[in-house]
Image 1 (cartoon, rainbow, N blue to C red):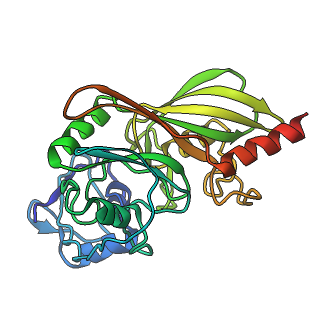
Image 2 (image 1 turned 30 degrees about the horizontal axis):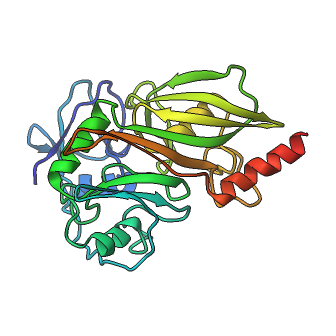
Length: 305
């Protein structure tokens, strides 16, 4: 397997901590196992977990091959918004995981797509994520696009890179925004302490840009539209929390107390705009706010009168 090459910009950090921070999905204990197994080297020399990084040091990491997983088609109902021979766009409900992962081996969007589409999904993301071009969180509802062939997948991935594939969300955020619109331009990376969370990380994060505008103001909350320029994990949730407006119901980046009637954060992927990978024509899709989201707005309207 081709080693992963890492180069620390600064020195003095324990290698196990550096690896856990630098490799997405790698825990500190897993990093320690790799070090103990001799899978982490520099100049051909196995490194120890207690060693410290040096600025500009080249660290090579051989990650283990993922264990084979059988992802089976499952007859799960899908709300298909658009479909042709190249792409399928689904309105994902709250609670559905996009692809199999530890703790969620089945019942995912991928399982449903395999049943619905058969063998026509793109293979670029491998067995666990066939056809998946981008993701939305388990407790976020709304539009997600999947590719039915590799050509379509590559074209859509290119649009993600050049920001021409537009994803527009609606959310309810806590607090009152001072302005009517704005932009959060702040890099996002793994939280330095809690590896299950993301955070604004000016030093080690990846570029992330979210544009927002106010749709309606209520007592204690604001209905906002968010347009992603990039697509980092938990981007809207992290960015709005970073400016003092966590999403209503987000117990990870906001209040630890769940909001009555919400399974998670109040966030819905409302619109999707892209160039069709085969024809080049502009495709603009929209799905209505789900009943649970509209119910939150109705409740906020009543208490704000």
